[in-house]
Length: 297
Image (spheres, helix red, strand yellow):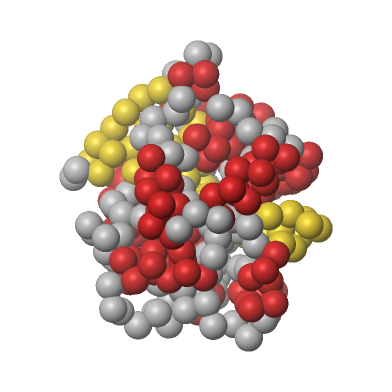
């Protein structure tokens, strides 16, 4: 089902009134392991697996132009969702690049570090097979996936193979949710709640220290980070931590594109049938064209 922002807000208000356990069940039922058929009619899809980790290519033949590797959201316990597939398809269509969605393992059955390890496994495989090369790949993520994208950027930077740029959409930056301003934004957020997130965090972190930068990327060392595009809505509870990370990137001299969408909900950017998302995608298109070698040549 193709959603616009009005319908999305109505659905989220409905889901937000559910008991947390039922909301979690609904999220898991919404899981979409492959792009829906309406998105694959004119887009070739190729499936891959490395060491048990599944991933899906969209328009693999465009890989020479650039590759966007997507870490999906879902609180580390659910996803990917149809909206994330649609965002990846739209962005890669406009930029004429290829997309890769990784189905990393989820908390509960496979807590941290399974998710970043699975993402890293696919990245290393694509590197070894020369399907991604220095300068021609980027990493993107929404919500929890946005946090993962930043964690993987640091891992790959330390290995000498960083993405050319990073797109983080409403990233879940601080699993402790202890920023002093977070409570101010909680009542505005119809997408997620502290109760829901706390359950997801418990399953994913599995008792580990939440200040660990790999769990809470707001604490990452961002020295020498590649260019970052960071976006947030002003009606999401992650906003204080996203702003704090923005300031951290600026202080470190990282090239940054930052956008706050007034009145927008959490992860608004992936609701592609909306003016808010169109503005975001337009910005991200220019960002990729500036930084992916295959698009700048």
